[in-house]
Length: 273
Image (cartoon, rainbow, N blue to C red; front, side):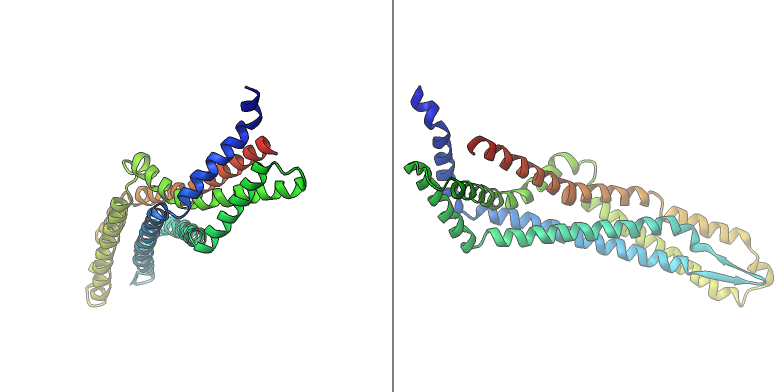
């Protein structure tokens, strides 16, 4: 019993070190993590492109004006709130792509042979230290333990972050906020708005040749406004849904993972220092 009380912490450290050494040069986790991060990055680029395309056709609609005697009608101004939301969404997508880009860089860094050999050296050095029970240089041992723990956590946490993001999305998010479906709906909204734009521009061209009575046909302009409203119907819901998904998947989840790593490392340091 006294033996267990004295050596159980060292036994755990050595056992964990052996597991890490066996897993260190197994790159399956890295490949799967990289695939998921690349998939998320490609997905975010496609969604960002769809949002900017919708922003372009709405900006065109907002600039569409019909000149009548004594005044001008700007039919597309009704889309101004949607355009503001899209611009805010574009900022979210930029932040998401930056987050995913940083994850890709970190994954490329921790998966290199140089990183793995440095970590291997640190693990072996620390285990030799605790097995031989070297009493000198306690400060150096503390630094060695902290560096080894941080390197191990980074080595496996970065690829696991990509896998955790995908698992969480498929298990808890996708049924309510499916990125592919929401993006298709955004593309459809863009097509609908563009179709109304074409009709409005056609009317603008013909209005110069029409009669005074046709120029003051308020029913037509009311119908055009209604068509724009119909074209962007539920678009706010689609955009907000995408904002929720990407903030959760690419910002909140990595931050949660970082906090988890931070408190895990603190717990390890408290137990062994």
